[in-house]
Amino acid sequence: MSVEFISLENIQAIAHMYGYWAVFLGILLENLGIPIPGETVTLVGGFLAGSHELSYWLVLGDAIAGAAIGGVCGYWIGRIGGWPLLVRVGSLFRISEVRLLNIKEQFSENAAKAVFFGRFFALLRIFAAPLAGIAEMPFGKFLFFNLLGASVWASVMVTLAFFAGRIISLEQLVAWVSQFAIAALLILVAVIAIPIWLEARQEQLGAKD
Image 1 (cartoon, one colour):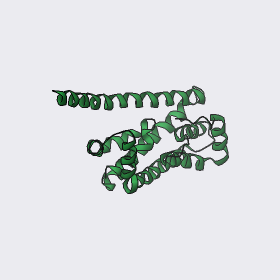
Image 2 (tube, one colour):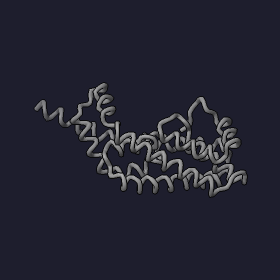
Image 3 (cartoon, one colour):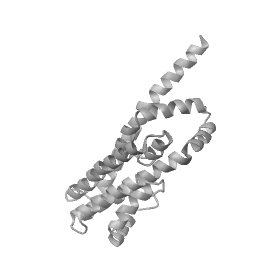
Image 4 (cartoon, helix red, strand yellow):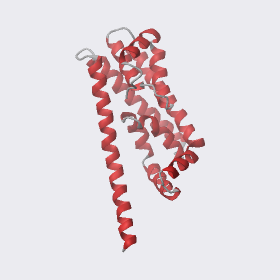
């Protein structure tokens, strides 16, 4: 996802100026929750590699490293202080701690999938690692799926920009990838939220009976 106050032109200028550091820090900071369009920075890096301004392998290595390290930092943020914060936020929306514990348990059962596939979903790329920490996913297991997910995601993004950038404009490529990430997130939210809503609805009807 891109951020309105950082235009694609500015990202390109930063990438030209700082090269590999821009790719590494862009995705690292995004994973820490800072509103930096890391996905777009990675696509720009791949695009510049396709035009031979940067090295494909160094861009790929920076993207993997930034995503993996950012994920580890996010995990420990969630592991150390995420649960108390989640309980406070839940109370604002009248979500009981019992309900949150149930959600936490459900996430724990699917934490590996969330960490791996979360890279490809808007927003979930930022929150999957802290949620894994909150769910107390074993760090060794998290480390494996975090690195695997970072490697696959970075490979897809950099390679896509490397080759597709020769056929379509960078602006169009970024727009398509962003639209896909948002659409995938909406579908995921629907898949998760609808069963939870139906379950809560059945509980309410059962209580009335």
